[in-house]
Image 1 (cartoon, rainbow over the protein chains, first blue to last red):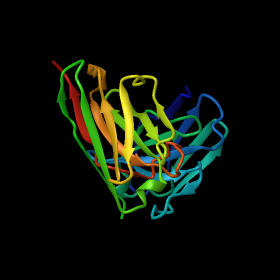
Image 2: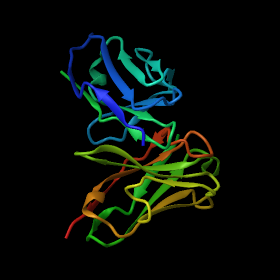
Image 3: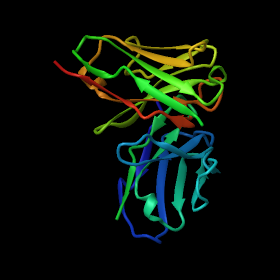
Amino acid sequence: EIQMTQSPSTLSASVGDRVTITCRASQSISGRLAWYQQKPGKAPKLLIYMATNLEDGVPSRFSGSGSGTQFTLTISTLQPDDFATYYCQQYDNLGTFGGGTKVEI
Amino acid sequence: EVQLVESGGGLAQPGGSLRLSCAASGFTFSNYAMTWVRQTPGKGLEWVSSISASSGRTDYADSVKGRLTISRDNSKNTVYLQMDSLRVEDTAVYFCAKDSAPVPSTLCEHWGQGTQVTVSS
């Protein structure tokens, strides 16, 4: 089973900050890496797939990068609506989620 | 607009059974694989099971293999999760999700709102 390690688990930030979240896979996942955003009491929402592709309707301040086993989600200018928990997921071999990163004020 | 509506959650005793349903609309259901994902406060998000568009392929997490069964009825635009031999550790919010392709990839493009399953004596 492929393990996904996300860091940090919690991130304190302010509106306007540049935010970076890291996800590491236990083995190469051929770029099959997704990022989701989840707000309290709501379902996750797909933001990015294949490591770098922005889902339709997702603001361009979100971007993804990485390859092999190391991946990054960047929010270029944090907006009030972006305070949420973010999860990475590998879908190269079934599916495994990272532990999540809570972005808080 | 894609809509996924789960139902069937509730309270069950250890060893008991529940059947979750997920009614889909807003897309051609028979063209896409479907996935169940669960979430607990302690373990976060966990992929549970996926089924191909034609039902020809099903995949399960090791933690549920032999106890949970995924199925679908394309005439009813509905995917099911039959949960048998329930354990306390199956307690979670269960989400159904639309996959990105006919064959399961587990990439979840759209999610339902979730249904709570509680297993307790």
